[in-house]
Length: 376
Image (tube, rainbow, N blue to C red; front, top):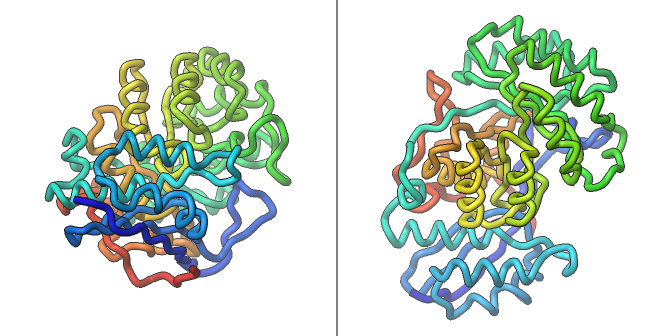
């Protein structure tokens, strides 16, 4: 089999209104834009991937290095993608292409990737991941609604100016759902490298992070996500040692070397890499295995689109230490189907026990849908 073409498309999926992400205070959005990659072959099979990437850049830099090649030389192609991206080249690595190559491999093999990569489980627990910062009363009501939809876990954004406000939101949700749902919380303190605050949001100190951990321990919070900067390795390691609260993070870290540092230094209990921006899918299997050797969980970030979710489910289905999938939404503005509108139904949603079932279809198990608008 040989690659005959690399096609790059940019698609937009619209929401039902305006949403205000807690991780980017002061900004709003009414849609999500995703770059889709199609790898065509001389045997009529096409691999599908998604992420970020400019079509012009891909056609100039990436496509000429792939056309005519065996699509399954993954480590070679990974090196090529990595060496043609990064801040020094003013363009992120287009890991969605590596995702498309793996989708192609699964289709050629006639097997779903989660089986090819280990076949550990075909069920992964979903958590409804909130987007906005809302009042305690509203979040308690929201949590009960997600519980009725089949979710048994929810992630809140604790992005208020005071710790008291953050804790009040978690308290309200815990009181509403009791022990029927796991509660995760995300402080979004690792968005910007170094020390600058992200626009108009609160910047946590180590003291605030530790004090928040003490409060969350009492509320049985499953994990606290990104309580400090992404490169504050010393502070993260000290915080993780100082508290019984499980600490998670890593979605904004890039490269195997950064994840090795995070794991070796004990910065996080749970590693949350992303196959769109952290590294390619196969490289993240190495991160998951390294985390497993250090008795840590590997719980991927949301992946930016339904195709990214499918990629992360393939990773989780093959790993013994990856028990959750993040489904981003914010009802009534953004339903799970709105965020996942890039693919054709069925969408990724929980069953009555809060579990997402992995597809038996080959590769990533998804195809492009029609709830989208082509931009490029």
